[in-house]
Image (cartoon, rainbow, N blue to C red; front, side):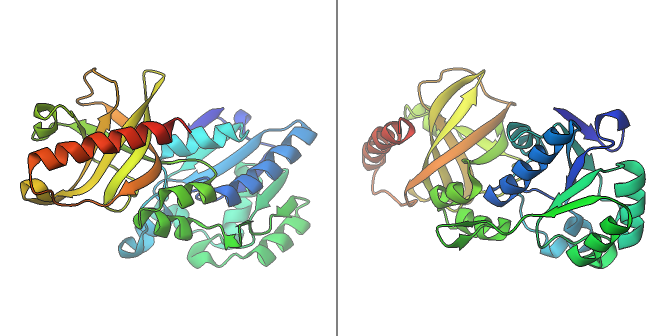
Length: 306
């Protein structure tokens, strides 16, 4: 798969079937679109292309209302490749780009730059300045320009409509297991490993402290997770929140990677969440804390083997 920053290699994407959107999370609804996109592209022996944005347009238009991201661009591209996309174009959401009217967007991007043979979108797709372009307008433009348009109906999982906003609410509440059902894959948090107080190391449970995470941090709690390091998957215990036993109130992300002894400082660590196992609590003594940590690790080992 080709990952492009802007329209830098036209031969990779012109004449293909295209889906345009943020694709944040690449959830089950997105995956239904991707299945249709890839199917049409393969049938016509042309590229399956996704056009996405970085940053999210709302981060420029209404930064105070911008939701936290569910995926980094790197993870988004990895997931899109997994579902068969041949080319991902990441377009900077600049003021000039966002000022294009619906018709200008269609003729400048879809017709001239992408030279799209067909489009695959969801029913709530909007495009152009002030989101003035709707599916009805897009259908009319496509019909007038001999471009195929396939609109994928909303996806429902166990009577729950799949959407990025619903998934964000679940992750924020700590329900990473239900979030994963709607995502169709584990929720991943990425961050750089930085030095902390090294209290965990002294207690026999060394932790990697994550900072500079650009996507949504789950709600406070202790979680079972996995982390892949140098191609090997390890179980992980993740503590998110304050550390009340030691009188600390700041929210932190601390990851204890099971059975790993290497140096992670300065590296980016990806953590794939499986399940929340308990809330963050204050322990009366260090011995009580250590006893609970040992119980946590037994439970986490069992969960990551499932």
